[in-house]
Length: 90
Image (cartoon, rainbow, N blue to C red; front, side, top):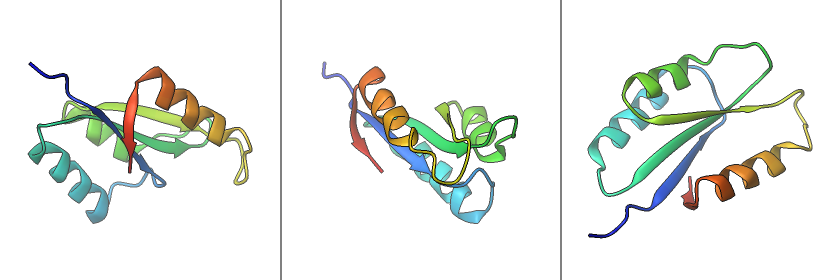
């Protein structure tokens, strides 16, 4: 039995619109991989997109950003890749 590889789907929006619903639909139709969906969020903001993805049974991660050009973002993404043994990032 092989172990499923993990894919990180990184989304720049926390809005739940048609493109984001399409992403969730694709996740539901691909069973060969484990998916983690991450989105950038400001402190104390709600992500309708991540809430929806989580309600569909997928793991989600909110990547906190303090301002538009937060230099810590690449380090946070690298930590996600290491912590979850990500093999591919979309």
